[in-house]
Image (cartoon, rainbow, N blue to C red; front, top):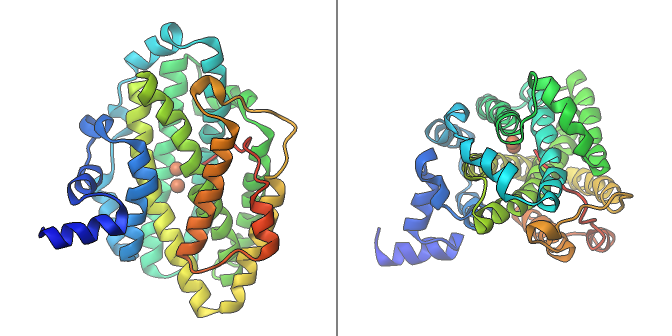
Length: 332
Ligand SMILES: [Fe+2]
Ligand SMILES: [Fe+2]
């Protein structure tokens, strides 16, 4: 790569060509060298600038697929039981459990989206379904082998449900409703736009990429949970593909029918209203975050994603954005 190309590349993504290649090609053995901040705030945007097709994203999936059974949680078990404090453990559980359940729910709600759309999109969604299933197994293994829960997949989900906050109900309850509506008419573009606004733009593009950074920065700086760091950083790279393809879908749908912009805005109004209040409090401080930091991350991620699909926030939505509750410790 020439110096000019390298500079262009850096301007586009905020990463040098070498940094980009290190993330793009990282395998399980070297993923612990990757900084999660680079994946979430830079790498994810590199590919969006190039607007990769669904087939290109499918090819990247094949190269980046990792084996969830290769992760070693031996040190994680030691860290969890010997090196982390009680306050750190309960803060971690309050944040990770909304992901444990989120991954499982998106896994089961996504097949309906594959019933419609173009053949290329179906190809990509098939890979995303497999990703989400693998993310579900990742959390199942972590809760089993690091924390020490017992039983089968559903037994472990049942046990971790006690740590899932009420903020889970808003976006994921809406997603279940949207999936039911889509099942009756999978090619209805309006329903698909509403579904993708909630799933790919809000749950993945705003909540997941923000919340991932919280536990991952903690694990990296505190030097604990290396198995969790490896698997969840690879999960973040998978999520980059999901968000990129989701934003591509929304961009194309809005070009095809600009009246659907209203559906993006209305869906965001719904999720923002539901996400602006909570009767529960998530303690982020024990793992090194403030509520202000978390809220600022949500706002930044939403504004950046809207920008990428070429939409501004209308004044009422811009006001609602300021009220996103920091307690939305969920993702998928
Ligand atoms: Fe996922
Ligand atoms: Fe995802």
